[in-house]
Image (cartoon, rainbow, N blue to C red; front, top):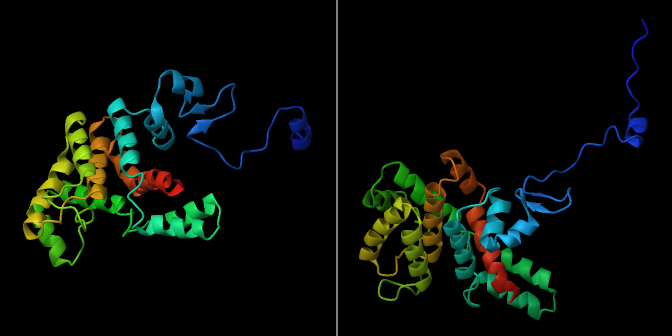
Amino acid sequence: ETPQVPMDYTWAKKLGLVRKPANFISSISDDRGDELKYGGMSISDVFHKDVGIGGVLSLLWFRRRLPEACCKFIEMVLMVTADHGPAVSGAHNAIVTARAGKDLISSLSAGLLTVGPRFGGALDDAARMFKEAHEQGSTPKRFVDSCKKGNKLIMGIGHRIKSLSNPDQRVVLIKNYAKKHFGSTPILDFALGVEQITTSKRANLILNVDGCIAVCFVDMLKSCGAFTPEEVEDLLSFGCLNGLFVLGRSIGFIG
């Protein structure tokens, strides 16, 4: 019996029967149809439903539309992290690069390359640190004592200028929003318990804006009902919190 000869690929491709496999795919947007889609939502609906920047970010980063309170919180984070003056490493580098005659993209890149544990990159570590301590059943005092014994910095705690008597209004705004709009705030409450202990030693060892954003973001993910515990873990491990800082601070660097 004569074996069946497979179809010639070149001939089949000309007839439109097969296509070459894609080298890259995107799970967050789709431009193949009549209209661009973000996370399954058409660009027309993005504007008709007025989802805003927070809604667009939720569709592209989290591949789902989050509740309105969560989208507003994301926008709030971008607003409070947009700039903090020239006396930080990122802004300094961006300014120096611009004054050296380099273009906008080069200046922005120079500023962003300084983001790390000592500037803007503490959000992910703070989120993990407070979340793990709370879920392990630790008390704020045991947590502080453990960090002291292990000679570990508590990420998200401490500010050079702000203190209990001179609070950071960004922290006040974020904290109040989370308390008002999120179903529960156990990680924020735990962090505030840690703050009570650390500020008893020194007044400027407050929950700073990085720490406040981090713990409130974890509470948002856990309480909004859009994510499983496994998905929350994945999102925190992907660095999305530091991504929010980079996105927000880019506004100031470009300015």
